Amino acid sequence: MQIMLDTRPYVGLESEALATYVFEEADPVQGLIAEIDQASGGLLGKLAKGGELTGKTLEFTLVHATAGLKAARLLLVGAGKREQFNGATLRKIAGAALRHLKSKSVKQIAFLVRETDANEDSAQVVAEGILAANFESDKYKTDKKNDKSVDSVALVGYSDAERAAGEKGLTRGRVIAEAQNFTRDLVNEPSNKLTPKILAEKAEAMAREAGLAVEILDEKKIAELKMGALLSVAQGSIEPPRMIVVTYTPPNPKPGAPVIALVGKAVTFDTGGISIKPADGMEKMKYDMAGGATILGVMRALAALKPTVKVISVVPSTENMPGGKAQKPGDIQTAMSGKTIEVLNTDAEGRLILADAITYAKQLGATHLVDAATLTGAIVVALANINVGVFGSDQPWTDKLLASAKATGEKMWQMPLDEEYREFIKGTVADIQNIGSGKGGGAITGAMFIKEFAGDTPWIHLDIAGTAWNDDAKPWLAKGPTGVALRTLVHLVMSS
Ligand code: BES
Ligand code: ZN
Ligand code: ZN
Image (tube, rainbow, N blue to C red; front, side, top):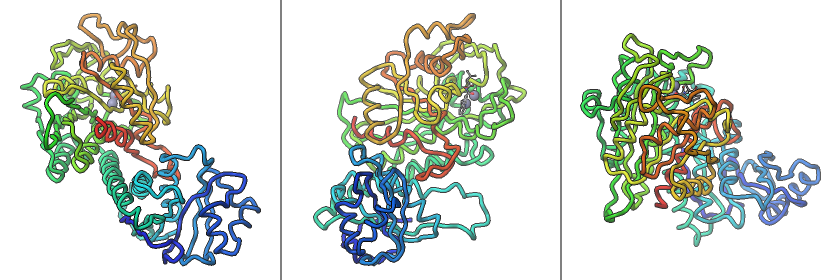
C-alpha cells in the first residue's frame, strides 16, 4: 500500500472513500464539516440531529454518494472532545478509518485532515497510523482469496503552500511505520522459523540494506568473551546463541557526544527451562524476542533519519530450553562482568542475557543505556497491557525518555527502584540471585538485577511484557505484535 500527498481540493477528488474526523461538541457540524454539510444539502446536520453523528471517540458514520462530493463514500470518524485532541488521537483515527474501510473492501482512500491540521506533524502521525493499521498477521495463510487490502491512501487537505511540510511529515511517518512493521513481522515469526541464528541473519540483511555496520558474535566468540550469563541460558538448547551488534555512526561525530546503546532481549522461545512454564498459553512465548526486534526496528528507522549521535544496538538472542545440558536451579554462573549469579529460577532468563549484553555495550563505549525486554509477568499484574513499565537509574535520562513517550503517544509509567530492593536479590552463596526472595515486586527485582550490570552508566529498562502483544484487535491495530516502544526510542535518539 502506498500513501501520498494530493493537494487538489477534496471536493472534486474521485476516490472510493473520503475519510475525515468530527469533534464531539454541542454542534459537531462546524468548519470543514459544515462545508461538506452545505455541499450535501444539509445531510450531516440531519445525521447530527438524529444522533447518528456525535463526534464521540471512534464513532463511525459511513454515507454513500454524498451530494457535492466526487468520492463514492464519506466516512466520518469521531475524534472526541476538541480540547483533548492531539497527535496520538489523530494517529488512532487515521488507523481506525483505514481498518474500517478495509473491512468493507475499499481499495482506495482519501484521508482529509481538518482545517487547522495541514502541517508536518499531522502528516507524520497519519502516515504512522495508516501504515501500522494496514499490517496483518497473515503471512502463513495459504488461502488468500477473501483477502482485503487497500492499494493507496491519499493525504488531502494540504494546499500547494503546505505541500513541503506535508511531504516531510509523510516521509518521516513512512520510515517509522515501516520500521514498526518490520519489528512486528519478526515478532510474529514462530520459533521454528526464527531461531537465534535466523534472527541474526535477518538483522544482518537489514543492516546491510540500510547501510549500518553489523557484527554477529557466534557461540565461539560469545564463549571467548566469557559471556557466562548468556551461555548459561543457551546451554539447554541445541540452537546456538547469537549476540547481534548493529551500529549507526553519524557522518560528523562530535567529540564528547553521548553514545547511546540500545539493548533488546531476544529469547526466540521461552519454555522457562528446567523451571518450566505451564502448557497453557506457552505458545505465546515466541514473542519473548520482542525487545530485540524493537531495537532492530529502531536501528532500521535511524539509518534513514540520520541522528547526530552514535547508536550501538546489542541484541542477545537464545532459546530457553530444558535440554539435557540445561542449567538447573541453584547453579552458579559467572557473568561477563565477573559477577557471580545464583540461578534460582531458570525462567528468569531475560535478565541473565541482558546482563552480558549491557556489559558488552559498555565495553563498546556506551555512555547511555536503554534496554527493552518482555521481562516479567509481574509488570502485567502492575500495569496490565496499557503502560510500558519504565525503570531508570538516572532521572534526567529517564525524564527524557518519558518526554519522548509522551510526544509519540506511547503510554509508559515510571516504576520505583529504591535501594531497599537491592536486598531482595542479594545472593546467599554468590554475589546476586536472579529472582527476588519472595517478597513481591517481581518487575522491580528484575530491573534491580539488570541495574547491577549497568552500574554508574545512566540506564533505562523498559518492561514491555504486557504491551508488546495485543490479545485483541483494536480498531486501529490488528491483534498480535504491537511494535511498542519503537516510536519512543526513535524520538529519544533523534532528540539527543
Ligand atoms: N518471558 C517471561 C516474561 C513474560 C511473561 C513475557 C508474560 C511476556 C508475557 C520471563 O522470562 C519470565 O518468565 N519471567 C518470570 C520471572 C520469574 C521467574 C521471577 C515471570 O515473570 O514469571
Ligand atoms: Zn522466562
Ligand atoms: Zn523470557
